[in-house]
Amino acid sequence: MSGLERDSVERQARKVVPGVGWRPGEENRQDLMLRYLSAVATASAARAGEQPPRPKAPRSVLDEDKSVPATPRVREVMSVPAVSVSGETPFLEIVRTLSREHLGAVPVVDADGRVIGVVSESDLLAKAAAQAAVPHPGPVRRLREHRLYEKGRGETAAALMTSPAITVAPGTKVADAAWLAARSRLKRLPVIDHRDRLVGVVSRIDLVRALVRDDTKIREEIETRIIRQDFLLDPDAFEVTVENGVVSVRGEVDGSLIPKLLESIEEIDDVVEVSEHLTAH
View 1 (cartoon, rainbow, N blue to C red):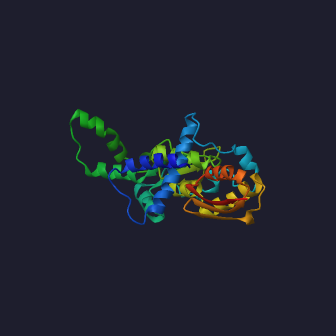
View 2 (view 1 turned 30 degrees about the vertical axis):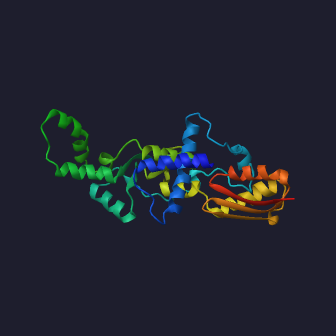
View 3 (view 1 turned 180 degrees about the vertical axis):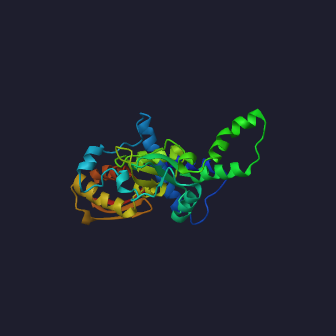
C-alpha cells in the first residue's frame, strides 16, 4: 500500500471515532487494522467495478506459482465444526449455548443441517425487552414496536432468529467475505455448502489474520518471488527484514535494477513502507 493510500485509509479510520487519539502502545494494532481496512476497501472497489489502486499481478499467475501463497479462501480460515442450534431449541437453551461457547450469535439449522437463520444476542435481548416493557397504546408507537413485540413472543430459535441468514461459501475469497462482514456489521458468518448445509463459521478475527500476513510471509515473498524469480538474483546476497509491514532491504545490485526492484516490493500486499539501503555496482 502506497503512502497516499495509507493516509487515505487512516483518515477514514479516524473518522469512525472522531477526536479520539491513538493511545501509547497501540501503534501495531492500529497498523493491523489499517492494513485490514485497505484490503476490504480493495475488495469493495472490485465489486463496484472499479479498478483498485496499484493493481497486482493477475490471480491466475500467483495461484499457479506454488512458491507464492494463493488467494486465501474462507475454507482455509473457517472454524470447524460450527456450533449451531435447531429451530426447536428453546430460548433458555440458546442463552446457555451462547454463554457456554462464548459466542454472540449462532446459526439455526433444520433437520438436514441447512442454515435457515441466525439467532443473536440482539434477538434474545429483543425478547427480554419485550417481556419487561409496558406496551404503549399510541398508533405510532405500536407500529414502531410491532416487530419487537412479535419477536418477544417467540420461545424457540425459529421464532427468535433473524432470517434469511447472511452466509458465505467455502470457496469465497477472504477479502470478499471481509467486505460482506463489514457491510453487514456481522462478527461471524456461517459457511455453507452448495446445498445450504452448515460446514463451518468464519469470524472477523479469522478474516483479519488471513488478510494481513505476518512479517515472515512478506519477507519470504520478497526473497522467493521478487528477488529470485522476477529478478533472477541470489536472495543470499540481500538482507531483508520486515517489521510491522515496514521492509528494509540491503545489498549490492545493478544500479539499473534498483528502481524496479523497490517498486515491486512496494506493490506487495501488506507492505506499508520500504526502507532502501541498496548499493549500486
